Amino acid sequence: MINYVYQLTNPQFFSVKLCDINIDGKVLVRPSYMSICHADQRYYRGQRDMKILSEKLPMALIHECCGEVIVDKTGTFKKGQQVVMIPNMPVRKLEYIYENYDEKSKFLSSSCDGFMREFVDLKPDRVVPCDGIPPHIACITEFFSVATHAVDRMNKIAHGRREQIAIFGDGPLAYVVATTLRELVPNTNITIIGRRLRKLARFSFVDKTYPDYDIPEDYTFDHAFECAGGEGSYDAINNIIKRIRPQGTVVLMGVSENQIPIATRTVLEKGLTIVGSSRSGKENFEKAVELMKIRRVRRRLGSIIYEDAEVISIDDIHRVFATDQDTPFKTVFKWNL
Image (cartoon, rainbow, N blue to C red; front, side, top):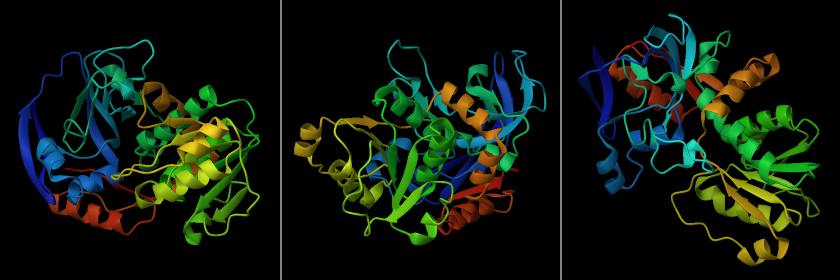
């Protein structure tokens, strides 16, 4: 079966690759809605090291996507069923290692072609049904699953006192972590620390928000999530280390291209646990879909989504990436190429 794959060949330049795919033992999905991630933008704009770009490209972008089943040779899904697709591609099952941390795993739109294709052929265990969830929300399931994975790791690693949890960052990652915490750790007090008052105002469902320049001197917490990333990582991480209570757990989620110096003496004195959390696996997708079936969760997620016009040409791909530069949270679009 001939498939059209829309590959980024150089920053801001796409070409179409035609390839023949074998769908035996596979689920064939037609992408319907997609969402842009910061990682996609860094590739598109050439904001990665040139050595990395030369190794990765050409490559189809996008790893946040939902679609409709066209053919299922395995009999697992019905034709026309709405599903989300898991971009992580494990090649083995390890006893102690999550699939998203196995160095042998591949990740679509990072180590191989992402979802910008006419059709996507996947093994059935890489597909999760999401019936009843509006597609413009379902397409951010991968992003939401990153939060469910991080909260799951905190729940398994952190000590039992959860009176105060702080999230440093005011962007979409902080928002989905706060949404997940509100549902899975309902009795905790959630505080958001960020830099932009306009974004902080979106977190109406948490207990408290502070701009990072106006945190009370006596404010402390049991555990924390760092969701700042980039240049904000340094201040966020060291603010957490300074204010967290002894033996707290710090979950690092923000991506920074530069090395971040941290106050190791304080880490040792307080006996802190620092956890790196990235990407997600199938069980996190399933938890994300389960949470998305709750109306208030869909309402919250919908408030951070901007739906651009549908993509019907390569020019439209350039348009949605430009639009995403000017939207404060998540840009999604209908895929019709």
